[in-house]
Image (cartoon, rainbow, N blue to C red; front, top):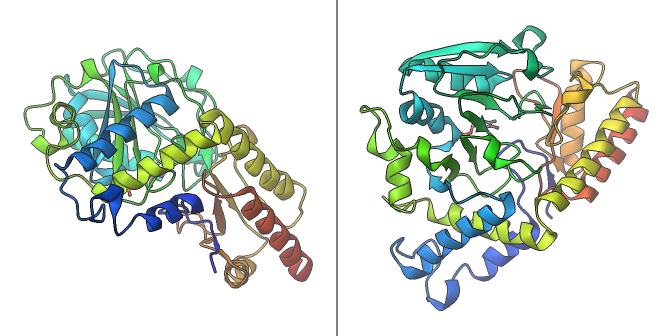
Length: 357
Ligand SMILES: *Cc1c(COP(=O)(O)O)cnc(C)c1O
């Protein structure tokens, strides 16, 4: 039996996509081979990379002056790649709105003067600093932000207007809502939250920004290397790219980002409304900044939190345990989580409240 999987990542993938992959797993596109066995230099494979890029460009409306790269190492590897590709004058601004944002900032400090210009750590990351009140430095090579904070369940509702290129970690919300790519210098995202199995990381970078990486930048971390080689400089994460392409096709069939965003807003709305109307469950994020992807919540006690996670699991609602930094529960309701999954969770929450309040 398939369960509803609320994991923050790796996370659920659309059932249709898993079935499609299963159907053609042993013989991909008449090659007589599995997609996991084909050479990455084979035409059948480069066609996948090309289609995935085309689909992503279409879905996100990515203009021609941006390159789309499929790389390895996760979003965390990009924390280093960003300064190594962009820190030409050795200075950058960082906004820290959660654990991953902090890690990105700390990695940036290894390579230069990574300055903390705003943080929401004072209130355990339950809000996003007012972007209009941040004093950005004039001499920055870039400004780094994390658009959706996976662990704490917040998201930007408005992105800062900056003189320096805006670099954004969208790992836990890419393709969940419409964004204007032209407002960003670089967008990057590990795939395992909203797009594919772990292994591939998407980098969308304005072409003029990738030309002069720092001399110490490793070849593999140079976006320029990856761009010049169509993401095939070395063996790419073939299976993840293939799966990403199936997910992108699926998303196009659903009507694109605008449509999935409506569904995401609806799903998150159901869950937040229920929590807000309950005296038993609480979510401590400032309402305006609530994420529609990751919904943390607690019951009145640690003991009942633990009981909740255990009983939910027995009821087929898995991976609801909150991150160790926050405790309680977290429901990650990415693109692939069906409305039915959220409704089932709410029914379970009602029942648990009745029995334990
Ligand atoms: C999961 C996550 C990361 C880490 O991704 P890896 O691919 O595991 O390195 C970074 N940033 C955000 C916002 C995330 O949600």
